[in-house]
Length: 196
Image (tube, rainbow, N blue to C red):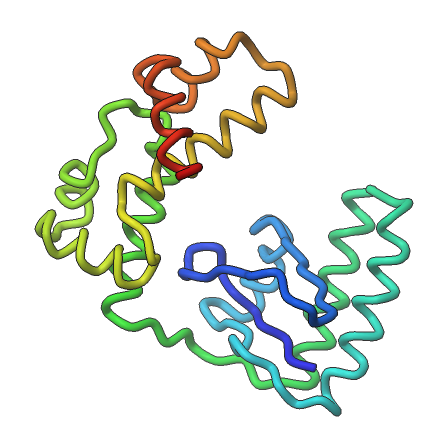
């Protein structure tokens, strides 16, 4: 009966479990009108009031059923606005509270997202860009994300490679280089390490 609201840059994960769950992934574009009205305020990260959540769950279930047959972007935009309106009626929105540790990891994740296609992206280049020592970034990144900087970057690059491959955007060699690997062999090494 809980709703978790997580910004894409906040460290998080979801493990499939036996519980019934909906995962709604929304582009930041859909949040723009919300930000116009509420500036830097955010939804509570955990919304656990079962009574308040009844209407929200009913809305999301109905939206899910409708969305199976409808991919209209304007319709999705309108549904997002309606969902946000419901949430703001039921919960107080506040200024975000981010720990110093998470702030550092969020900065690293943003840097990775912007530079994962650069084959020279490294823990050192990221640390320099966000203004912390390599050792400190490594320790905090491992602690919050549960994986190494290199492991995370390679996972992201592999995911992007697979998306491009599925869309038939080029040869495997071209895709590997487009996703930040030095070569196809480097891609296969990273893939082998992820699988182990």
